Image 1: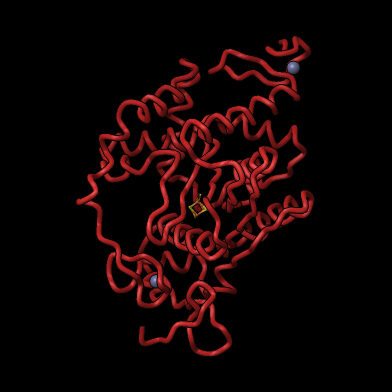
Image 2: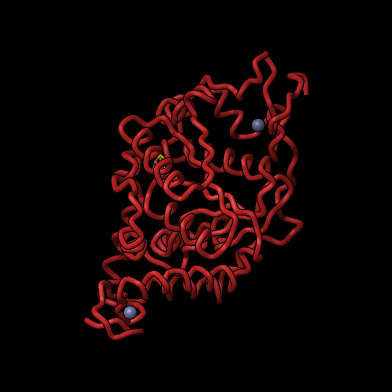
Length: 320
Ligand code: Q46
Ligand code: ZN
Ligand code: ZN
């Protein structure tokens, strides 16, 4: 097996590109794929400040590493979910990576900063844990990106993730979700621009990238992921990909090229956005979904020492 670029011994094959790479040229390939995704989908401009949502897993650490390598000013935000046996370990990997590269990492911890954890919030709100988790992440990452004045929020979703989500949404023809499946979502009132720079790279490539770059990452998946539909969709697509290399790429990028725009709702149909009276975030009613979750889970907004909740770093009167 020889490297496609230098003909030296290859360390990895990427079947959908019908190519093998040595370590050096594989790393270059990963950076090129990210640069191509960023340019092709107008995710970022040179010099943009990016906040990276970091979980301590391979994808989020790899995307952070590649963005820094490509010259972006990228800081990390780790969200501690309070999941025993998972959160403390994954936080350790996130901190160790940031320290080893001299990068700035903000840590927000649900139990100590907001008074709840994902398991108990899910029980209290009668939601599945991943739904309470997704809601918390969206709210807190958006809030942190706004507070820090970042140009964009980047996540580590890779091609396998996006193809699996698309597969699930197509199986049920969830038009609303299909309209939000592009790898870049433009900023809106109270929302940062959201980008997924790894969409041209697969899960196996990200693991190889981390090994070759000496990045230690949390290998264990979150225990809440077990048995969820998303994993089943990934397995189904893996078996298709096995027989037909490139199928995931064609499925996902074919959708983006030929169908995604059909699902974006016309401007006049988009839900009018108000402001949450408690936290100041965009909301469809007086109180946003995150503040509802907090209330049901017995949590609280971070306090400034007194009784007043803090909105984006400022105190807001309770009566607002
Ligand atoms: S972290 Fe959160 Fe995932 Fe764990 S609780 Fe579900 S959504 S599985 S990416
Ligand atoms: Zn080579
Ligand atoms: Zn709120």
